[in-house]
Image (cartoon, rainbow, N blue to C red; front, side, top):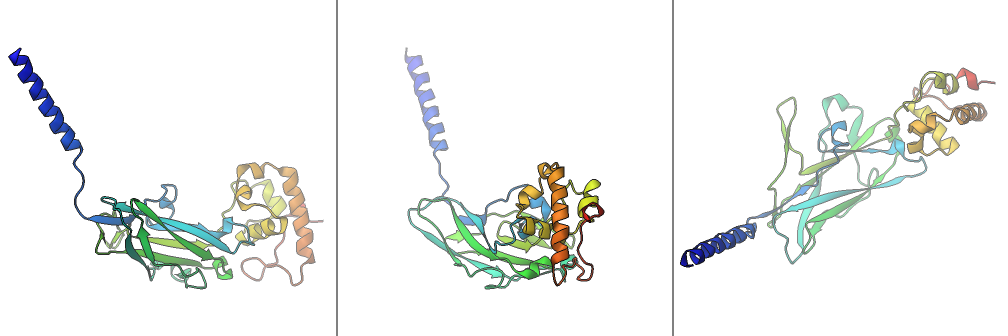
Length: 267
């Protein structure tokens, strides 16, 4: 009996010791970092870059909102903790010089509050930014770089690093680069007989068709849209009549070639 009691006491001691170990809490510093982005977005550009494709949004919409999540590392607190963000000059890759410029406050985005707060008892916060659509985006992209700033209470404790081809290192979870443009990619269904209806693809032509016909650009890009052959033929003929009526004429992206539909839409 005595032996059973000793074994029971030892087991209880080990159990309590294990519980205490599980209950240990982090007692170090606290930090901040930008939430990891959707894996479907990251491969498109650099790993700290968020594309904002105005080309896939209806032409009459001139403002767009983007929300950046900032996460906490460490323990929550029962009081608000403040930190700053800062707009930095974007480092334009060599291959994009002449095609990309830095965004300008009041022109490409609305001024926003640069003091952020991790609220009491919370583990993250949001930074909301209003982006503005301008005509220049049809020929050039605009980039807005936003970087976290350390505070006494919120440090840089974590970030993945990216090394470029020149061996430059970048801590990619401490900044976000928002790149705006008017890109509207060629739909997968625009080939073969569609060339006879719409003619050769150009982004300006696609945008013009969507705007004149009131077509939702997300639906335009879908495979289902390309299966509506009769409707596409109607669009081609209607657009050719519309183009013929424009004075001055509508030109292609080169500013010299008159825009026109394909031979099956001529009359």
